[in-house]
Amino acid sequence: MSSLLAEDQVGPRLHLPPPFTPHRTENRDVLAAAVALAPSEGAGTLVLHQSAGLLAFAVVLEPEQKLVEAQLAFLLGMTALGDALAAHCPPDRPVRLNWPDEVLFDGARIGGGRFAIAPGTAEDAVPDWMVFAAELIADRHHIAEPGSYPDSTSLFEEGFDPAEDIVSTFASYMMLYFDRWAHDGFAAVSNRFLMRVDPPLLRGVRRIEGDQMMEITPSGGGRRLPPLREALAVQGWRDEAGPKL
Image 1: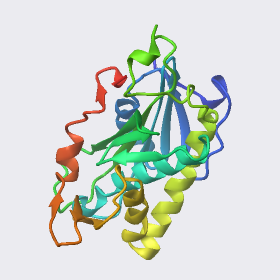
Image 2: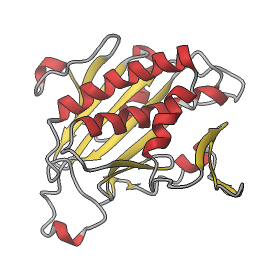
Image 3: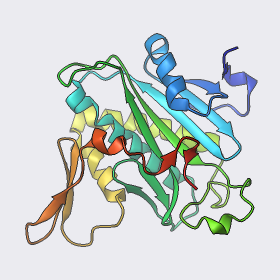
């Protein structure tokens, strides 16, 4: 039996802008669920999973650019995720990003992003579809002593707004940032991503060059971080069960 459920069968309704279409799923791996739907359901398909300890959602994208540029949509997704979390958390506590896919709240891991591209897509070809997915630690009720895991935290412990509000705001930011990318260039979006990179850069400058992030010191030195897809393959923030505690 399919694990996908109609939107009106489970929980509160999402308030998503067009063209997003919600699909709730019992499958904790929303990336796999969205990949399965991508060829038939197409762009705007948004898969949502909510269960003890986990809030996860994924959106199907159908880019118009070749893969070498289209892959930057992952950074757009991370920017939308960071801004959505910042809109629904207690004030004056930072939402930060570790290049390229980990999300921190007030210095503790709260989740991250994942990415999938239609198999066999060449660098100079336009992908049939891509999927951006987010996984967040919803709560840590199953842990006897949450204080034993100081490197992580959860939406519940930190007093975030309801999950549906976070997902709906994420979708709105995705639409906004795709529009900015189309009309003002990718720098209009990447600058917001760079503003959230941890730790804050007090001197020097960060910028995106191709599929890499550069950090340049005032003296002209600096470092080039691993390319996007190489860094995404590591997934140091999660294990097979989801975000690490």
